[in-house]
Length: 323
Image (cartoon, rainbow, N blue to C red; front, side):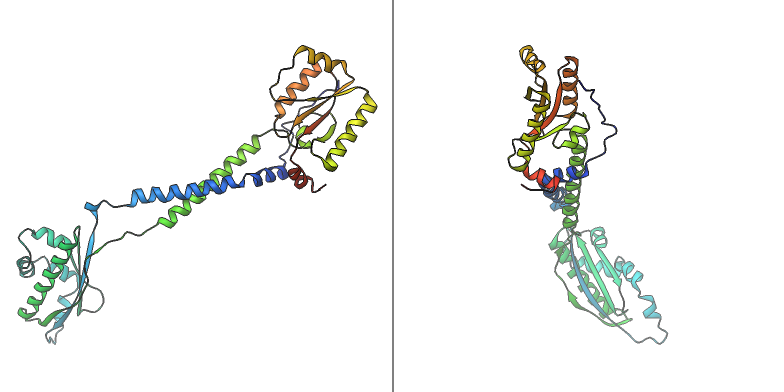
């Protein structure tokens, strides 16, 4: 029997076969991407949802400051953004603010919730109140506005202070990144599936095409049996050619992991030749190598190998031909 050559290390990757196998399972990557998108969205929602007790509400007022005439400009310079933020916590303003609030409010609570700043025009003061409750937010903002209005009537630096715009307390919504989380989950899921498929097919040594057999043995490839059409005709012609040359040639259907009984070995070894026909994609190269060694040990002549019940569409795309 001809010596079999095993050349796994020397065999390159069959890119065309790899691409075709990927194409048949691309739906797995799509499904994994969809699952990743769902998981990404759920994880984001779980970590981003703020408990009710920790939610923040915010309300805002625009205050117009009508300054009294001052030729030196010292009044304008004194009431800048930093000064107003400090003034809101001083007794002349805070005491009045507390008078407009129920006794349940503390001075620390009011000063901690209130922020005063001059954004651009020195005559426009912005008051922002942030609390964990909408009602207290509105109450502190209203009390602060009334306190400043009183300040405008009493302080000599002003003609008046007037609240010109007020908003109701609204829930502070964090920057939503749900879309980004979904997209990240989609990409991670799809990429993970593709990498897993790549690893699987790179390590997969199942015999599907003649090139897979060339990595295991130099025994002639007879063809693809049980597929019909031109491929079937070529297989039968190849088998007839072998029988014409060798005489009695038996086609043995190779099954992955099968242990042959002694009587079957006797039948195969008494023939002038054996063609091992393995089902498409169901026999591994390493197992075929083992079987060939068993035939060699028994001096049972293997004169050909074949692939049966192959996928005609796959072979048509692989070889670029149709029947």
